[in-house]
Image 1 (cartoon, rainbow, N blue to C red):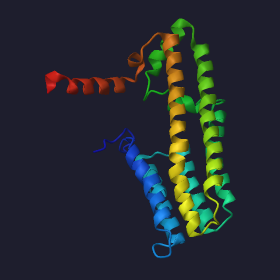
Image 2 (cartoon, rainbow, N blue to C red):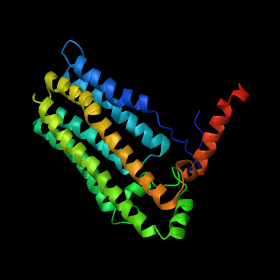
Image 3 (tube, one colour):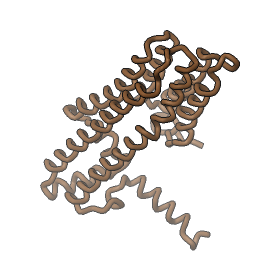
Image 4 (cartoon, rainbow, N blue to C red):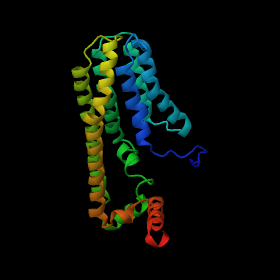
Length: 253
């Protein structure tokens, strides 16, 4: 059961296995296995296959109010993929589209570094993850605010680099796998293969890179403030961890 947030919407809790199933596995299986004329046909398989991630993305946006830039780009990406297949455009456009989406996100990350709200600060250095006020007070007391801001800027550049990596890999994988004319059964099957291959070859390395960026940020906080990770976790996360530790302690069995 989900609990409502202050905005009146249910709180959004990550569901990676459902996201993976709906956005990757089911569409890929439909495109690879049901595109033949004896099943759905190439057009119907493309429409139904892409309807899963598109419908799931819209559900997330409407249900939880997750109206963020990256989510919207994801919906645009799915729509463009469907358009390329249905309009039977040259398959080369798919490679361009696959590269363009992460490139646009990476550019947005860079541009955000010149604003009051860098995306790294929004995603990693925020009150839902860290006790920002406590960290800032320690940085001011130690005279390390300027050095921390410089490290945060570096983290922004590293973060943009992960999307550059995704952009290049997306283009190469699309050019390597999708070689058949769009609108054909072979195109759908190759699109499904590309979707499956892109997850381990792009998503997992990108996730590891983002974890390393967070580790870099955390090591910076530790060096400049002297706090341990537990000491700078967001208060609500500390409370959740204490409640979990208490419930799992032998005395409560």
